[in-house]
Length: 272
Image (cartoon, rainbow, N blue to C red):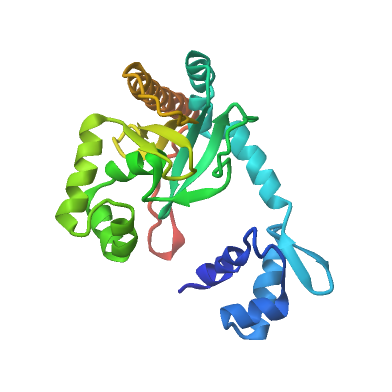
């Protein structure tokens, strides 16, 4: 593990269940030498990622709030989605629409429409959800490259079997292939009891899956009408296209305002 990885691993200690850590607790939990832990905590505090609240205790710092504002205002995926998701929700006129992105072995909600809802939905913005349950996660999982799926299967075989995705690699592979062929995934009460999820995938312009768009509503024993998943798939494709357009425009602006400076190889002795 590199020094940077060791430093950043301290941030992983902070959870909703354990939001406050002292230097002594960090030292014991990580196994780092006290001097090393002190240096890492000081560097994190200097950067605003941690802040001291007295009595040797530290919490996550205000730099995260700054980053959050930057993401809300400037993230290309959010910018693309915010042009499409509000009109999608108006057509559905029920439940909520959630946009989630892949984060390591988790799926993280990054936007929902509307913000206020009467649904008892656990995984609101910023809360990661498991990768093997729910339409939101399964549609992303189904579109991951096979080499990544093999690694996930080897590392999470028991969880995959518990999620009903197969006990053997071939069963797991086929379950995901079926979801991929449909272009959408429908699940009942897998994340929260009494809720239905209908998810479709969002891709980068290199066809790599980067997010999912999910409609979540109450499960009243109703059938999901065919136009709903079709609409989700259509809107996901529009977000994919809009994201590509934003990145093309950004690339053109970059070329216009930051022209490429030809590289000149330095000769021996430092002469140009």
